Length: 461
Image (cartoon, rainbow, N blue to C red; front, side, top):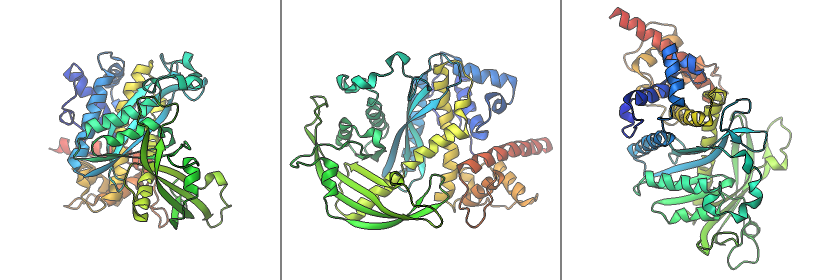
């Protein structure tokens, strides 16, 4: 994979050129060896000490790292020149239950310790990851455990749910109005105040609903009213399981209707009195999978979506549903960050240091994730858009057990498939393309082999 350089981060200013260079070095090291410890991917005692010192150094500002990441991400989106992009948001727990680090907070309960991480990623409307756009990490004060019981008395700006509003607002600032932004989020983002982002230029929202809200001119609540709407369509789709390997055939009922949602009693007085949205309900009514027992009711698909997009036909409804399925990309990102880079196994001594590491490791994790999806979305392009010449030549020799390499680089699809083979993907007829795990394993082997190959070449020269 092409390495990032200082030139890729023109807004980076950590107060010292050596710190700037160390930032880039760590990203490249983690990308080349996802899952390795800091001593292992650093390669020397000097570089190991420098990496630990980087995260510990108070002069390395978390805000500066965030700024560098945001401008890098925005540049990638603008350079791709897509008229419309999906911005996918989520909050994840980064757990450090067994780590004695200063400043860690509680997670879902008093026993869980770690850091919370809000992340926004950009993707094309066909589901190709483009960039890591925004990230914010924080810890909860253990003394505030139980404050959710008093959340109705707290101003919106002081609530944890304000992270969703702030995240979307920051992305809107980073991407100008030449790019249409469709913000996508799960049920945690069903927040009344959030929908007014739609009044910002070139911005729409697609949120999975959690609340059954009051609507104008209807005695029924929102989703009770939608359930009485006429059936728009019954469609049959193939649904993958959580592993992405097995599929089942599902029959879905689709209903939709424009609604005017009223301001909740608990919303701040300055909010708009109502907001006009389109409500979409997708409910699975039957499922079949050879040899498997029937699914439990809670495992059947039942999506309640709210969008600020203008939806006037069944085709547009199904497009919204398809876009919402791209939310899975941020789950895949978290999978690479946690299982791939092993971010939760770091042994740093403070929450502040861990938050810096999360941001740097996130940039590496996203690059690994992009490698997998690029091979699926752009199969015919040259692999040199991602791999260096030394890497693809090494890869070809390893796979074909030959010193002879072609003059022209192989396709990106073939390269990713071969990298997957290095990582343990068997490539049988029913296996499908290599997944994230086999690719990051294979890429780690490739980087090590390519380094040896380059060393031999340099000695010959």
